[in-house]
Image (cartoon, rainbow over all chains, first blue to last red; front, side, top):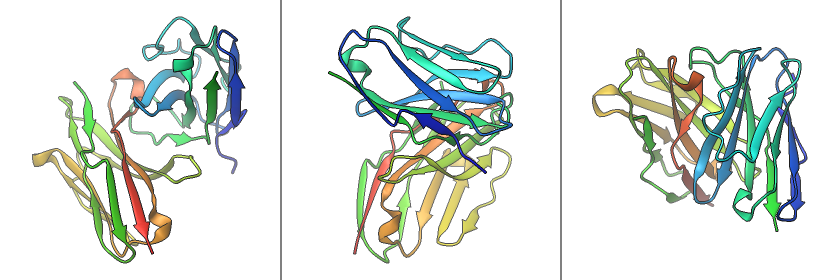
Length: 116
Length: 116
């Protein structure tokens, strides 16, 4: 079946502009995660959605970052007033559930964001 | 604190050599899960294996094998008879029951280069 898809693949933006990154999880997966991968910081957790529960936003680095998940499926990560330090690869993952920690997370190809 | 350490930043081997990637983890939880992911140059994280804390049996899958030792908090990954296609960054990750709803804590990764 189809895996996790993300769009766009690459995004170049100017400092101060807003960007939206999209993630389409594997069908039937109730848990969805966003991670950021940068050279200096490795892979960092950003936010987690499980079904209709309130998201776990504990990994968001600042209030310029937000995410929503509509209808329990597609998710959008929004970065407002982008800064150069936001340049990174943003990875989305999904799993069947997320409540026990044992479910395998399957990752999308990522969106490479470059802020000039 | 939960932490994953991959002390080897980069490893270079010649094709057909065996190579072991080290992973050491820290957690106070008794129920936790360990993962290995492969990130080839294309960028997508590919799931390789999951192991739960109650299962210390080693696992072999083709040329890949994993050695889980709770006594040393290690979950090492060995590639036998390495091939050029094994060149990638390999990540070890930890999640635990009920904590942060299952987000993965990643090590910094080990970049493996297999030369012909």
